[in-house]
Image 1 (tube, rainbow, N blue to C red):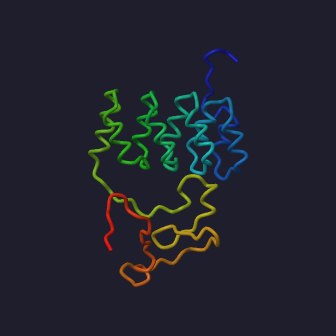
Image 2: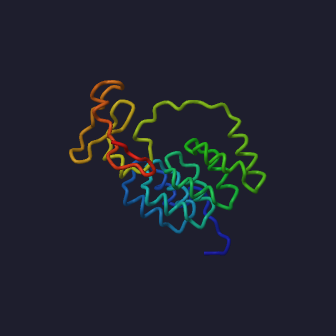
Image 3: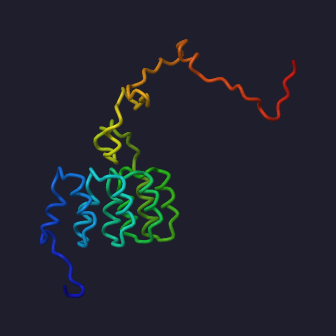
Length: 194
C-alpha cells in the first residue's frame, strides 16, 4: 500500500458491511478492529454499538472515529465525559452537535481554551430549551443491558431477585409513609436526653 493512501468511500466491502442494519454483535466487533479508518468510523456511528466497543472506539487513534462516537446519540454519558477532554476540535464540535450531551458538559466546553469550541458551546447554550419526548428504550445505548430492563410507566424499576416490576405506592398514601426508612444509628454531635 502506498503512503498517504486513503480509501474512497464505498471502495471497501467492509465499509458497506459496517453500514448494514442488523449486524450481529460478533460482526460489529470484528469490523470495529478493522485497519480501515472508514470502517471503524461507520461502526462508531451505529446505534446498536455495545458499551465495550464504545470505550474502545472513544480511545481510537483516528480523530474521525472519535468524532463519530462523539456524535453518536446513543453513546453513554461516561463516554461523552471522556471525549470532553479530547484535544481535537472536530471531536469537540461533534460532541456539541450530539443531543445526548448533558448541559453540564456543554457548560464545561463553554470555558474551553480554543475559541472555536467556546463559540460552538455558547451557541448550544443559547438555543431554546426543548423537553425531549419519551425516548424509547431501544434507542438508548448499551444493547447488552437493554434486554435486562423493563419499562413501567414513566420509570424503570425492577426487583432484582425476581426480575418483576415493582409496584410503587402513590404519593401521600399510608403505604408510602410505612416504606420510608427511619434512621436508627446515633447522630454524631447531638445529645439525647431521657
